[in-house]
Length: 320
Image (cartoon, rainbow, N blue to C red):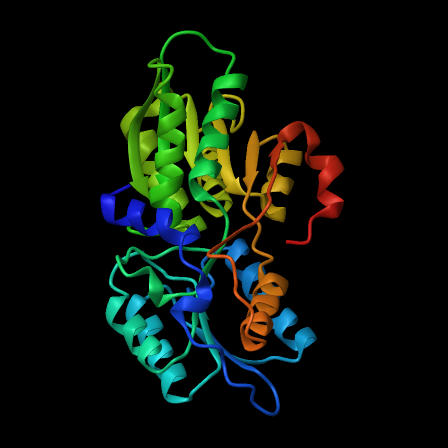
């Protein structure tokens, strides 16, 4: 993590949100929330969108929703549109960490508070948003690494291939960092290849095919930054004549239903949870802002870890 980003996240707890933005004027009628979503690149993202739309309806909040199709320029256009429409609150999941300063300053100048959901931004001025709500991606990487060190049965060097998320995105940066932090304690665990699969199933399959062509049976472990890439990679592993979760141990993150189905089929070893169901938390935060309350600077989602052995028992409880 670079110094700017470390400074940004470290400062989150230090500044009361109320100092960053004046209390919102109490308007008649519905609260209006402008939300810019990254896209629909995965099961996780689709569940996240559904949670936000359902919670807005339930809380009586008017939602202006924009799908950026995984392009930062589309998100910036959407935020500017929300500013022009004078919405009460802007929330967004940033597709990448950097490049947000100008548009966030425009929102602040318009006295519209901004909530970051799911992903952080890399900006020195942390008064540009009131709170960051979502998972601890570094800890998800650590959980993945700990599970591997505690559960890997083989001897000798352990060759790991890594499917990274979107280049420059907070989860890709942090999940890599957390995983590496843990495995460095045991030098026999080595990442021999690492490449982005852009969080999609198709790209995960394509990159895993390239890994298999380059390294073949040398690969012992696959660490995927999300379930969709892992599911794509499982296809590639099977097409190469290998058994996923046996010949190659597979660790992924999100814990979507597709991952549980793969675990129940014996093709995925473990999925670390990253809950997309942020809608209710987000709408409550929007209402609290409207009521003039101070939000915590960091709202962390509580999450678990699900190895293959518990998948069948846990599957009926999954909401995404």
